[in-house]
Image 1 (cartoon, rainbow over the protein chains, first blue to last red):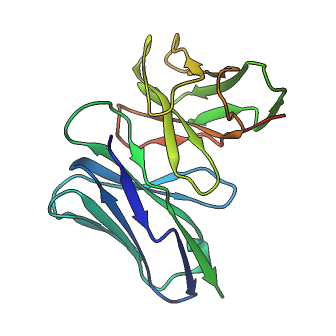
Image 2: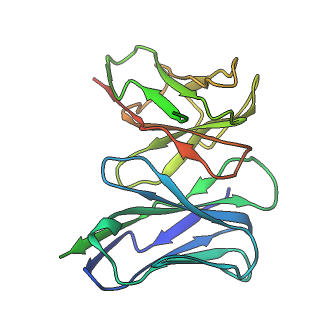
Length: 113
Length: 112
């Protein structure tokens, strides 16, 4: 079945440093979504990418969808303590089969002031 | 307020008992989902429903059952057949399947 892998699993950064998490799928995706989960909270939708090579920005966050639609990245510029949490990517196999998103295991972002 | 509500937040059950987790949404969404989250793991799909009176198994459906008799409600029953039921359970809904999902606050189930 479809697998979605995220790296790194944990990332420690100093406040103000940049952060990037990478998402790789074993199959071509029809779309990819990104979610953020704060400690003790529930996932909150950040963005959806659909087109090959698509790049979207939200303030300090930049999201990218690979040309082959098998990988994606989230980059945060100049991290702040409010960025702490776990970032998940989630994608759907473009080849059909079961609907429902497959989530990566997430990247835990830890920020040291 | 529009949203998705899970109850209760914490639930304790004895081994061998079935337990039902509630999920209600007033967002008028057609699609609803149940995910399980274990420490250090991502979200794994248990069941999903694209429309009322219809649902499909996800990746880890064994030991679980659902119903979708009303658009607003998608309860999950954790049966005694589920070998490791202790986990954090998240319900979500979206306008249609695989669009932006809105998650509930989750139910933390502990089976002793």
